[in-house]
Amino acid sequence: MSTVILRKTSVSKSSARINSGPALMTWRRQRGISRKLFAQLADCSERKLATYEVAPKLPPKVKRPVMETVRLLQALRELTGEDAKLKKWLDTPNPAFGQKTPLELIRNGESDLLWEMVYQIRQGAFA
Image (cartoon, rainbow, N blue to C red; front, side, top):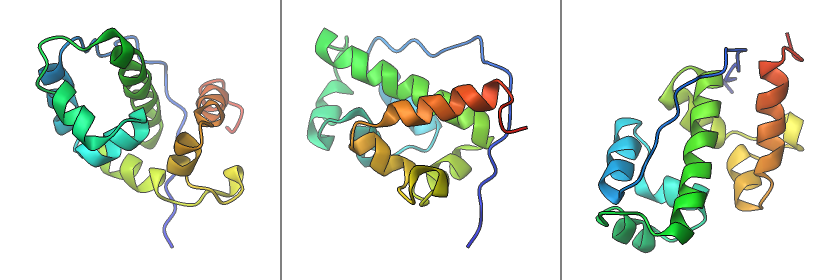
């Protein structure tokens, strides 16, 4: 069993601003994130996500969960260092989360635990 090491990084000043469906699809594809995975993270169906990805402007009810998902993925990507490691980490049971995977936490509405971990690592709590 391999372990993904999370590392302390500086807070990124740049954040993706995604206002349209094509921009979301481009952002997602550049990072190698499947539509299925992003839909799970954003708590919507793949079919709805496919519809949103061709929309010239993201509907207001969708923009918030999409941007929250993007920000969380960016923060976690800073810690894992690579998109491939992030995807593996999302599916790996973690003792810090009672052997739940980070993806399970997100699905269960517990992404605040991931944000808490990000904050603690950024503050050097685990250094």
